[in-house]
Length: 171
Image (cartoon, rainbow, N blue to C red; front, side, top):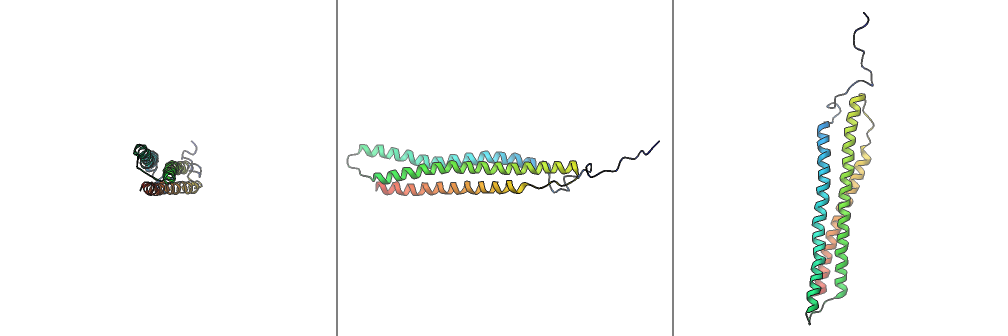
């Protein structure tokens, strides 16, 4: 009988346990699912709250003008009210941009987490650490996240200024 010992492992067949790679694959999968849930929740929360305040302000202005139109001695600054309308509409548009920024940031982060899983699987199969290409996704996610937050802040700013302009237009 010939040599019955198992062949020595080669570089392409050596399996590196994922614990040695510094990543828990199951935890990464769980994070992936949580990020997807967060993406949906984040976008919904922004849209609901900022549309509520800016849209509610528009409805309130319409109601005010309708009620003021029936009063015979009521005066208000038409230009100021138009400016308030414009600010509330801008707040609505910025709200949508904020939600889009949140959606894309979580999408990029989702992609990075998926890359981590693929890298761990490749390392387990080949025994070699693959090229780490997560930086681009992380950077894009951060940029989208910062833009989303900036748009949300601008939306609140538009609402605040619009409320002040509307108040000064009716006093």
